Image 1 (spheres, rainbow, N blue to C red):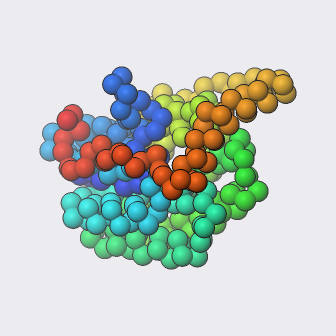
Image 2 (cartoon, helix red, strand yellow):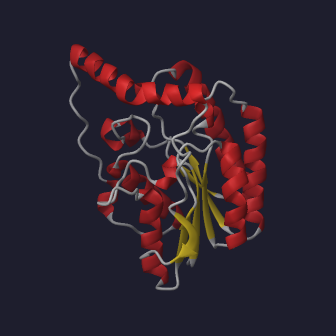
Length: 255
C-alpha cells in the first residue's frame, strides 16, 4: 500500500545519530525511509520525527506517543528501550507489558506500525554478560508483540552484517552512515518498497587489530565516550536534556 504520512518515534537510533548532514544535524534511517516514501507518494507526503537521544522508554511513551497518535499518520515507527537495558534499574516485565500496550494503542488508530529487534552490538561494549540477556528478552518480546498486533517487524538482530564495526560510529553504540543506510534498506524491504541497492552494501570488514593497538583504542574509547556516559548517569543527566525533536510536526520531506 502507499503511505501518505509517517511519524518516527524513539531515541537516538531514530533521531539519526551518528549519520550527520553537512550542517551537523542528524539524518539517519528514518529520514532516508521518509525520502523514499515521499518519492512514491508524491508532494502530499508528510513526515515527522519526534525521536530524541537519550530518552528512556517511559519518556518516549509519555512525550512522543500521544503526539504521534494525535497526528493520525498512516505509518508509525516505534523503537525504544535500548537506553533502559543499560540502566541497573531495568525492569523487563514492566517494560514488556507497557511495550505491548503502546503497540496496541498505535495500531488501534489504523496506522501500520514498524517495530525493531535490536542489532547485536554488545561484543565490543563492556557489561556484555549483564546487558546481552536483557537485549535478548526485549527482542523476543518485540517479535511476540509484532505478531500479536499485526505490526511490521524489522529484525536487525538476525543480520550478521551488523557485526562489522564499520557499521557503527566511533562511540560503538550508535550507527554510522553506512549502518543507517542498511537499516533504511531493511525497513523499506519490510514495507515492500524498493530502495537504492547501495544502501545494503557493507564496507569490507577491517583486518584484526593487534592486541596492544586494540587495548590502546579501548582506552581512548573509554576516555572519550564511556567516561562522559558514566558521569551523566551519576549526575542524573541525559545527552538529550537540551535537545528537541528535529521534525516535531508533519511536514514535507523537503523542509
